[in-house]
Length: 245
Image 1: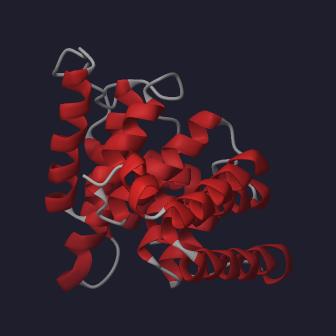
Image 2 (image 1 turned 180 degrees about the vertical axis):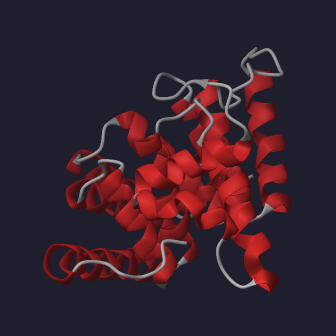
């Protein structure tokens, strides 16, 4: 792993530029430390930056996040970045937890209330996208209906409905995943719509983009901001009619 000390020794000029910029971004504010840590960890998973993830997770565990909260970011990444990547980052996170004396396995965060995964996922979809989502799991052409069912049961039921993070947290994480992936299609628009429903307003999503700038770079940050502004105008002027998935 290349450390900040290594860079400072071999490339002191670059180290000064990056250190100054990260300090300026962090001082800009707009997100509390907990929300900032959630966004940064999510983005680093999407970027497949294991070493930086380990470093930032260690910092986050010094008071911004609990181990359970950090683990939930990794779990949710399976739905957005794929299972193989989630497995790698789960191993990395568990290594950090073990080094800090955290006893594994961590407490289970299964959806409660007696719901099955379909019921739990549908509840979340309705909260984010409205009552029209009540039967989403069984909608669409027969050959692709399984995808809609799994979206309800797996993405929303298995992950979103877990109590380790709030719905607002999960949408902030999802927005960060997609911003780091460079996603600028209907997927990002849907996450902005869902974020608004989860009480993450435009100002908070802009603050997330700002905090992600040093990690995801200017093109992806500006693309995320463009989609956010376009979607915000659609919501406030013409409404938003795209399929929410």
